[in-house]
Image (cartoon, rainbow, N blue to C red):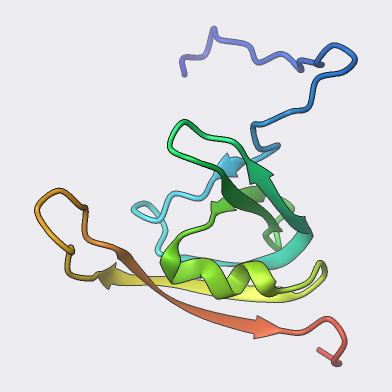
Length: 117
């Protein structure tokens, strides 16, 4: 985005439900780790290839990022609001066949909200 581009806050008309995240998706290529607090329960988002869940995580600096469900992150979506999470992208697995992309592999840690931190 250039310096002349201004972002505006958009509001949807009554009766519409937002299907975009209120945060940018985390870029695993630019930053292989993410640490923060789950800010709200996962949401199901309808996509062309089927629905997927998205989770909103707030980092220590207050920035919110969206993490999309994938096989490697599925357990993360069973965590609770307020839990602290640490996610590390560890590399790529082996693709099932030439039609599929190799899966991203992650290590995920959690500090439950119900225990002293």
